[in-house]
Length: 136
Image (tube, rainbow, N blue to C red; front, top):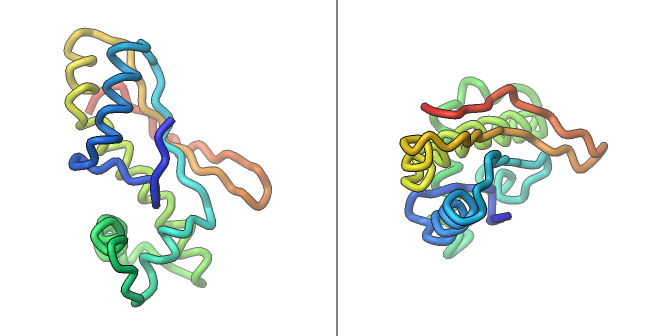
């Protein structure tokens, strides 16, 4: 399990790279679940104009996504945040699929799947985003 602010699988995050490499190469996991959650503080922060100090460079990933999909972020603030949570999970599934350890596992024929889900902490419902990949 790897957890960080706003559930970002950055290619420059040595921790996420190490966790996934260990899971795939040494534990032989076959399923990686990328899970976001509604009510995420990192997602909420990405909508604010505050200066969050060191977090700003981390939040820039989410703010880029917010800008890219601005036209998809409709409705009240909660709806916008929920949409951005889902878009972020989808982007992180793509990011995880590009991690060298994942790419190498697929080249070796490892039966590895990456799934995108969102957890609603208000009602406990897990929403499958219908995004499962075994190769990009």
